[in-house]
Structure formats: C-alpha cells, structure tokens
Image (cartoon, rainbow, N blue to C red; front, side, top):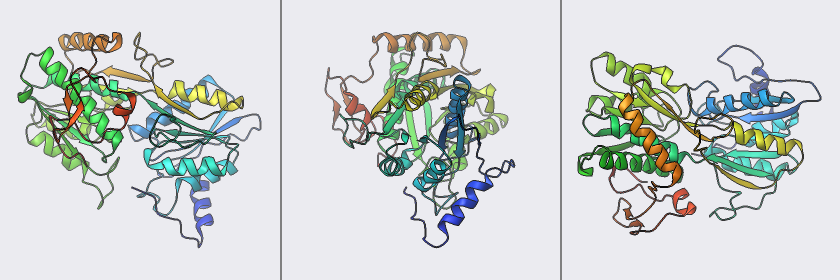
Length: 407
C-alpha cells in the first residue's frame, strides 16, 4: 500500500501543525519528544503505527529508549501513526524533512511500506544517516540493491523466532488446528508464515510423533499491518473466526493485539484456546493465562551500533540481518531475536522447546533443507539442497502444507 501524494495547497502548513501538535502531552496526539540542548545527537523516528500499539511500533520506540539509556547524549524526536489511514495526505519522506529541519542527524523509518520514503530521503539528504527497518536496498547480493551511501537496512533474523513460535504452537495444540492472523502479503510475510509452519511441522512430526496430514495450519491475511476500516478485513472478526471454528492456537503477524484480546474473550467463554503474540517482549501481559509465548524482535543493539557509527561519521551502506545470540537468545544487549515463554506453555513443552532451540543454535536442526515444495507443487528446495539467504528472503509463495493465499 502506497502513500498518497500530498496536495500542493497548504501541505506545509498542515504538516507543520501535525508535528507541532505532538508537543501536547494528551495521548491522542502524535507526540514528539524534543531535547533542545545543542550537544545532543538527535535521532528522528518515524513509526507506521502508534508508539504504544503493543506490537511492532512499540518495539521500535522501546529500542530507542534503550539507545538513549546507553547513550545519554542521544535525543529522540518521533512521529507515530505515519500511515495511509491516520495521515492519508502525508508521505514519510515529508515527515523526515521536518525532523531533519528540527536537527535530526539520523532518521529511522520503521516499516516496509516506507522503503521508498527512506530511499528518497537518503538521496535528498546525503549527509544524514538513514535507517530503514526491513528492506533490502543496501544488500549488494539482493535483488533490489541501490548504491546509496547513507542508507542502512536493519532486520532481525525473525525466521528463527517464527520457527520457535511455530514449534510452541504445535506442541500445545490439542486438535492440530493452528491459525495465523496475517497482515498484507509480500516476501517478508510469506517467509515468516512459512518459517512458523516449518517450526510447527518439525515439532509435530519429531516430538509429538504425529502425521503431518493431521496438522491444519491456516493463514488469513487482513490486508495491512493493522485494521483500516473499509480497507482491510477486521482483525477482530478474523481472530474470532479462528477461535469459533475450532482453532485452539492462534498466532499473529499483525501489529496490534486482536489475537490476544479475542483469545481472552474466547477463553472466558469456556473455549480451550491459546495464542502467541509477537515482536514485543511484554506481549503475554495482554492475556497471560492463555499465552504460549512471544517471538521478539530486539532492535536495540543494532540501533545502538548504527547510532554510534553515525555519531562518528562512519555510516556506510549496510544490510544488517541481525542474528540470535544462541548462548542466550533473550540477552537484550546481544541478541536480535528472542522468545519469551508464556504461562500457558507447560513445563514439559518448555523442555522440548528448549531442545528445539538448542538444535537451531548448534545447526543440528536446519529447517531450510529440502525436499520442500511451494503451494503450487514446484520445488522450493530439492532433496538435500540448503536454502541460500536470497531464497529465504525472497519467498515467492507459501510452502506446501499451509492453507491460505500466497498472493
């Protein structure tokens, strides 16, 4: 989904009013945190959703709080809800211009939907460091490389987090029905759903010793990262449809907490259901009694390292696909990917999940090894073939065994 072009009449005034209104502390406004001291290194953060969405955008906001704690000389200015619903006539690049005018020396764009805005800003402001959280324009071995010297792409290797979540789901389902509440469809979301399925498949077959034919893994896409009335499917209804049609574990890939909220209601109505949140370490707090866990992104270490480079004038084009720290995947200073265990995961299943995580870490378990087929029956990986990073990143279809659309 692309942003609409800002109409020429009155655009600057409208944008100025939105940004300056952020200084109002009321929670309904778009806040900007400003620190006017001249010795501060200012970072501008552009969030696609609310900074307190209990998901994706909040994780980025908290990562920058982590950076500010580690680097007291860093000041943060942010604008949230930069999306076609909340700001239909404002481009992310225009928000970036305003942040840079306020003194930002580094600007972070936190959504795949902002990739062109990030690139446009990098070209327009070659002396400003730009981070695009996701994307591949700085990946020299990727399909979409653009040689822009001040652009950095950062994305944790969340495939592992999704595999772990899929395993937890497969270990915990009582009837083999796992639902996945999906956002829009692209390479990124296809690879994450496929990774979750691979984790579920492995643990279903190898630990529970069950036939893969008895595992029903279904994804329903709503059409964006969160609900846009009249544009997307209503994620509340999609979550309810899963719980009401017998899916006893629901995973989520959207930015907002409908899987948790509706799961809590279903459990209160007597249904034996569980859910897995994602991206935010406190996600289980939404419904702790039925939460199996949360695969988390930890943007803090990569953001901190890049901020240090920007302060030193050492930014260069980088594609950072952040790895888990297999010695401790929940180490906030070293691991880009983690998994927070929820109250609903039994002690026995936690032991099995730990065994699975250990196998991923030491390489004895490689789920990206053939034979694996796409939904249409063509080969993703032939027997014995191991996937390249490019094959994993650019996932053109869902894998065979997943119910749901690939395009």
